[in-house]
Image 1 (cartoon, rainbow, N blue to C red):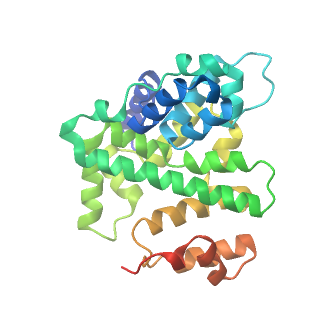
Image 2: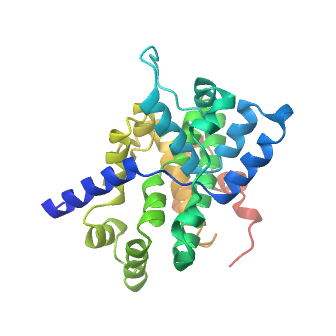
Length: 277
């Protein structure tokens, strides 16, 4: 990374640390409906809604990390636990489901909004895969794996929201040149990679060290990290269609993780139930 790239990276880290993180409209709507039903207002029900939105999850975690008590001697990654720490009734007042992504981006960036929604959907799909595999592997802390997969691409989501023109340019470069790697396109346009931004934000926001480890693709020798890595890959590749050329390798690697044959992996992820392109 060049000196200019480092300056740009630091500027974005500062900006994203000061700005109010927006949430998806459907998240705000569902939480609003739930709040009108006091009899159903529980940490579990609130968490189920929040865990569908990586932006709301990281917004909640960033707030907790900045306001955690000195007596808190362990890191918290589970959304339900975060809500309990903040207080169920006060959590949404301290971390409101505002502003909305759709309002922040505006009508002039509808294309970028669509891309952002695709990434958030992909993140949710990845989190579901990671959760399922963690349960199969008898990982008692499966929620941590789920959240790590959900937040794996949070930097990309944030940049689609706050830097839509640049993200569209990156996408255009890769569309024109199919051989261009993502990190090369990102460095060319932004001066830094989204991976570098994500790492810097996680450090700046003091996110749980375990979360940072589980999102680190360089540590895939660890079973839990590999679970997250493979779930993210499968979600990304299947988003291109179930005929994507990278999927057979995904099935093979997931099979090794779960001690299954690739054909069995295809069954559990639903690939056999998908219509052909």
